[in-house]
Length: 269
Image (tube, rainbow, N blue to C red; front, side, top):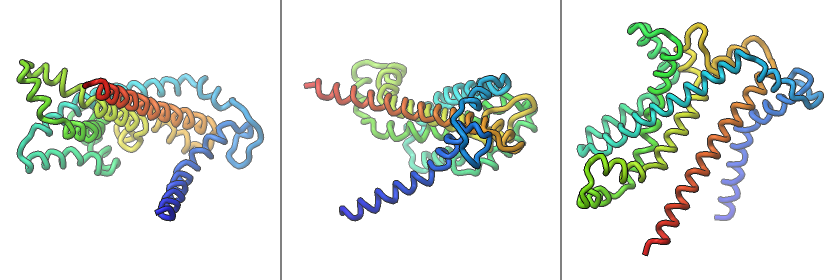
């Protein structure tokens, strides 16, 4: 067992090295005063200063954050409602069909999804821009929220709802005081996953953005095609750090909720 654990840990370390080495390389050269990624000549914050002085880029950052927050919020509301509806279905075949339909947007290639949204928006006359990007991000975020919330619903004992009804709670009170508090960790997980997916998405967004409107992923791609600029490294570093902050924030919130739940369980006789 000890030797197996040793090889498993070594494999895990190698995986993390392969995944994070390019990111660390990019971040390292974002502080290079030489202006290239071939040799580090000295430490500088010039490229970060250039990012914050670019008014157009700051507007794009604001667009990206607004899209991410709005789409995550809307997708969370729809996803929670959808997960509760799917959970309440008794027939296995119908429930399995709905789950399969929910997973289509997750397993489908992003290029196909983006092209499909582009065709649909063109056919129904939706102008490409803020609205098209928001609707697309909501659409591919909802299945993620459903998958995050469903396991928490499955963990919940039916006796909790029965007890609440026996005490006189109506359907709204059961939902607000029993179901939603119990699945709160799943709701937070779904919201943060939807938020990060929206921030990182490129393929779908590339198809549904219009003239004069862009997000960070599309802007970075456009700038990278024009040539190597370390301002792209600086911008990518800031995005990566923001994503790390989101993940750490979710971890701390989840840990605090678990601690409270354990504390309540210990206090109860």
